[in-house]
Image (tube, rainbow, N blue to C red):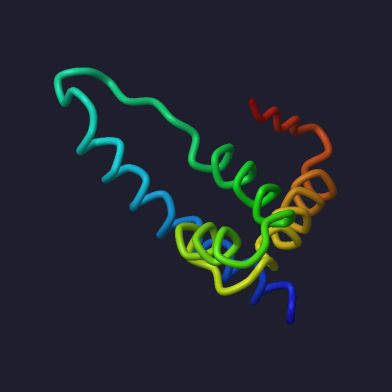
Length: 95
């Protein structure tokens, strides 16, 4: 898969995941309070979990992340490599 296709796939999956996560958090929370979350951090953790998951668990995580397979882990890795290569002065810290 070409690099631009990988980037587009990751962006599309991340957007859909972020919207779903926001809707879920909003439906469960107190709407009078501020909401701060990092979809990227949550998705990165889920992609690492997906890499080790099997069968139904892997399918469920992939569905939540809007991806068809475990390639999202490789896509995150490629994205982080590109960020560090093209912006060496940028430090990305994920909690």
